[in-house]
Image 1 (cartoon, one colour):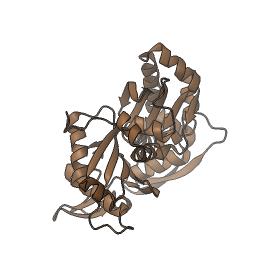
Image 2: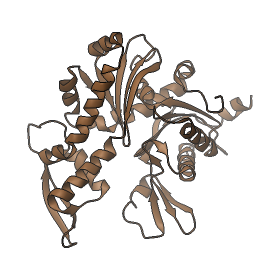
Image 3: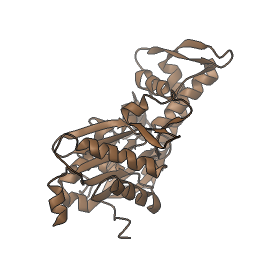
Image 4: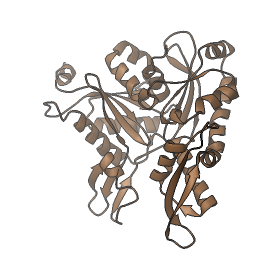
Length: 347
């Protein structure tokens, strides 16, 4: 009864708690928040100075007493207190346009498949401490498949490759559950590291992580392009310490990330090998679906299709599949109870 009363004064939310970005979905307004998972902290006073976009602008530019903290590593909470404050900020922001004295929403959160019970409890506790009255956890790959409008409850196989910031999750889903899966700690962040390392080794230039990501987005590709793409990269010369600019092209960036892309493709093949033959037949017929920010890498679908000889499709707006899936689950209680993970308090 009290929960119903609270429900009238709060808006239930779906949350994609990502390594790079946190997205929040409201049933009546759609995606209302899409901001970096970064919090700026004053280490002298333990005061939170900024969260999300504002904090992200400070990365690499802070004085000694201010830290730009990324509280999630590979989709798992590494700093509980900062994650709690970040979630509270986003929940309060989601309710800021409506009359709410103390928002107490029900929250659906996407979590990695290979998360431990302790890590799951940390997510639940952080969300409840941030103001959620009920927390439902669902596997990110399941949420991504639901967000991509794939038939997850049918007795046919759906293969989803969710390439996020910290992890790549490869899952085969059937009858509302994950039949087989594999998680790699090779995803968007690792590709950025590959680019940083390559430019350091080839040009003796040190660049920041945000520039590395920018290079990946602008000229990164997994397969040969029809036209050469090039951009100017500025960084610090490691020999004399002075600023220097060089031109890099798509072929060089492809070379930088090729090993990581190869590992992702190899893991997809291994997952297919461990999948029951009846389900492999379904995957061969319906194809593999790519979700997450990594799905936007040029030519990645073609490379995977060529290696597996299975059609590969990039989901519509792959960056938001997980949060859209959590949004669908908030509105569909029957589906939510079919696919949600048991609460750690029930175990």
